[in-house]
Length: 231
Image 1 (cartoon, one colour):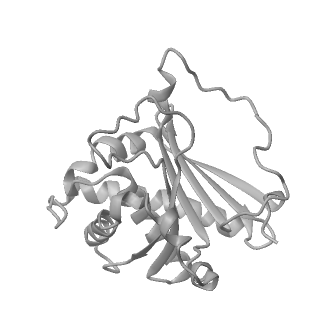
Image 2: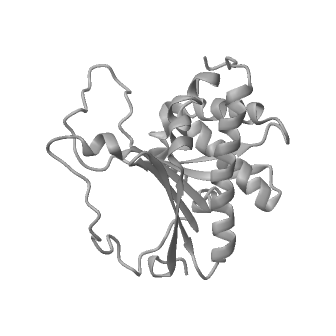
């Protein structure tokens, strides 16, 4: 069983100077978004741990994509979450820039940032086809919570709100990775099934994820920028 009751979470923080560089220094080189960099780092970290050059992920997004000009969703509340699978592949064993560009291009090819997948998957007649596509790792970048906390009507609290799901509830993936930026630091929580994965292995993977982010930052300080087809 893969239930909420079996979940253990490991928390990791990136230093402030590296977080600042991730936000402001890195995007200009290849015209990237932060998800491009985070997912490239994850792909490289998993490759280092498993030797696999491919990574099947379930990506989670906010779902409030600008699909139609005449629809204004600024005053909507609640979860519009979109979930969709993405298969990432290494473009090079050594060239960080080529891997960044490959991940960026793959993500740009996802139709409407995945909002249609939730409907399409349930139109598949054979349930085994859906199960065969189920990733074991999910990833969600929540954004900069610092800016959200500045709103006069809301503020972030550190209070433990308890379990928001039943402990008997089934988990869709074995490893859930959730990142956000708060107080100038990138925070990443790695939630995993303690009966399936060893904590030492997860923490090593999480540490290498941060190390890969730093390696990308260093690369971007010395590399020449480049456009990619989606540009």
